[in-house]
Image (tube, rainbow, N blue to C red; front, side):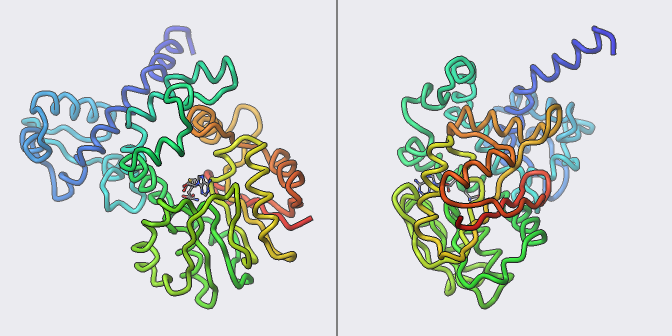
Length: 336
Ligand code: SAH
């Protein structure tokens, strides 16, 4: 590639934030849902979304220029394959995540990435004067948008995890930091005689009822609110933790694991679900998720060796790692 072409490619990467924010705005306005029944004109979409017609048109034509929408004659817009993934009812809907990523408080943390790189400190705390979890407690609207974003990944991830790992040998499975219960619901639905415990912060599990009921597992799933740095319920023989350790530095991760170690049955199993970092020059998704962890919650993604060290420091030994797809590996441990 000559330098001119390289510069053009690089420029596209540099301006990628513009594409991202335009998609986030489209998702926030629910444009894709308004196109479910077929193409509509830009003016119709402006009326349906209560937006400024000419400015909305500029947004839509830009989205069409990158293939998220298709612009036909007379400013009529239709969904493409990409745009279909922004429908709320899409099986792999990206809309809840796009709505979250576009929030100002979240972008503000990324704006301070330079601070993290210079100092090693968490960008979010630098931008907002408080950590992301406390911020979301103080801003319930943001908490709701975040919880819906996390839940939206759940069906695809749960399917990948259940295909790769057999939970049927456990009597009681606890999902530690299980959000609104999507994963534990999928595990229990697959294993009809199993009981479950959903554990997360009180204000998060408060919203868990509908999901557990719609999966018909509410009668087999205890819902417990609390703080995993203090204690988690006893009695489970599997402790599942999905996308928890990557939120925290080593010291805090070891603290959560030690809480689990105290509560888990002696013959119990730790089932950590996280991305595992690839060798150099590969695996962009996890490596950018890692930067997201640096900027937003102040955590990190890890290699298998790094997980083994965390486990050992908390009294577990790593028994095996199973690759369950691009975003998730199953890192299994037993009390040492
Ligand atoms: N396991 C879920 C959610 C991951 S997000 C999923 O994969 O979708 C991290 C979760 O950790 C959030 O639901 C958050 O509420 C929870 N969390 C953060 N701090 C916590 C604490 N101190 N005690 C319990 N849960 C906590």
